[in-house]
Length: 477
Image (cartoon, rainbow, N blue to C red; front, side, top):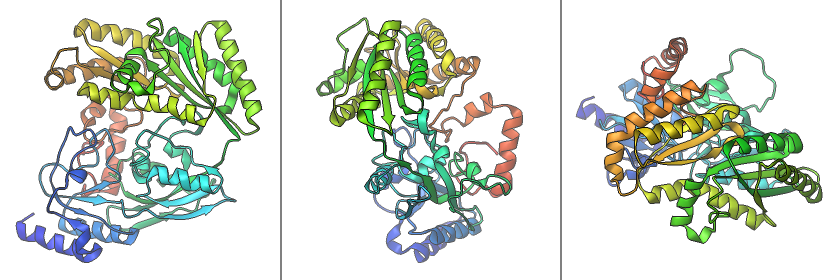
């Protein structure tokens, strides 16, 4: 695109959304740098439309000019999927102004919201009406529901409620041609052809731009109990999970595992959080369990105490703390959610968001821990995550007294290969909830079957033949 045609497009965009909402000067770091500050791009402009029609008009203008668009929500992704490349030719389309809660339908147990709504805002709006919106993740104070849908975000309650995909009943989407597909009816049964909703969810803005969604609501639980348990091994943690499923049933809403080194980083960098059992070196793993009950707190507590009693008798729990109130429960969850922050304080690290069949997680961790220790002397493993749904954040920290930046430069590719090959060996996925973005495109090419890759390319070519939406992300075409 020539300088004059670029200027012409920017003028068109200003006419569509207002000059004050087209940014191409000053500090645009918030839009051009990824969440982990590992990549920085350069946009032609950042455009901030106010509604779906403006999004559609922006897409039409960019498509006519042959200009690529990078859709962006809260820019909290971890796979470098929502910032521009460094060419200075791509338009960042920020959806943060589309932040209305359109309706809450109490009888249908749904809420229809715009893509730029902050996740925490949705949670609070639902609670004010007496409902639960169960999607919960560490970035909920800044991530947006559109981004959650675009990446099919997981979080801490997947074991009960599923990923974001399972919480969505309908979407409003702007196509790569600038047309609006209205599909927010909120129907739970609609067998009228291909499921376009599920196609868009998890596509990371490469097939369409989500502008609104109808999401499921649930009754608020009558009681919610939280426990922090010390377990002697990952095998015992898996046994405890089985007991929890058996004795709590659908009341089991959270089951997190945390390795000792991961928790030691929280204790080191955030000592005010007072990590339970951190002084006991005989505790290699801890588990955080949550039980929600629709009947009463007495009923929930009786079931919870029975579970822990069985776990002690079976030897899969050696010690436990049960939160006495909501404040204590929040404190325990805060410790768990502080692990990534503590790891960042320790220095740059290599992140892996992987999923393994739950039954095979102990063997995977034992074998991969030993492999990395043999290959890289002194390597430190930050292992934690959502054991209830088989999703681990199996992260790698540089050895002590080694420059972390140099370690990443020299070792990241080799470590990724070792870990992802092990993941494939154990029947897992190299991306459980963070998506592919641009960071893992080459990994998709290696680990996805050729048949699956060609099907994905056919979908991309069919819906976005000009490769306008988020090019270079998810799939190579």
